[in-house]
Image (cartoon, rainbow, N blue to C red; front, side):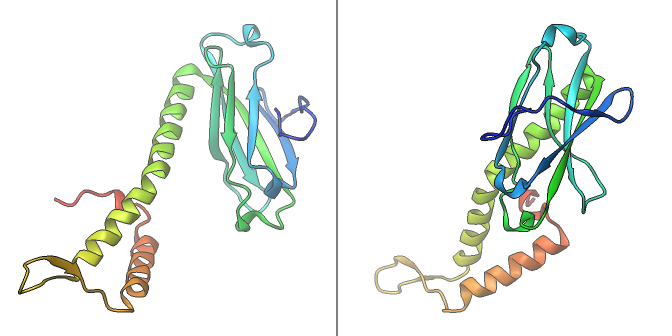
Length: 177
């Protein structure tokens, strides 16, 4: 495993027959990690690796990446540089040797999650536009439409979207039929 600016780490601690872990200190300074199979020829073609992370304050492992014989390296954007990670002393990285079909399924999950993250700003902008569209007024003389937005409209929208997100974090991605 490579953390940019730090020595390469290869000494994973074995925690079961197929699971290994390693600790990364000061995770708030780590924006990405790199995993490389140094000897992909040693991995059976029907096996792959799922990569997980957890901090000491979390009880669940979060899937963050996959590698296999056909794709022996990956760069993982950690998301650890956020304000929420300040003060977290370390993060554990878990590697689990899995059947290749499980690794492929995990890859699909990660790809879907990345697509959602890419589309999130667009969905927020669409939601804001739809909200502000309720303030469109037509000029009776010219027939031209204008936004006539009250000064508290943006604050009202923020409050509304925060409430909706707290009730259903995926509401932006639901279709309106």
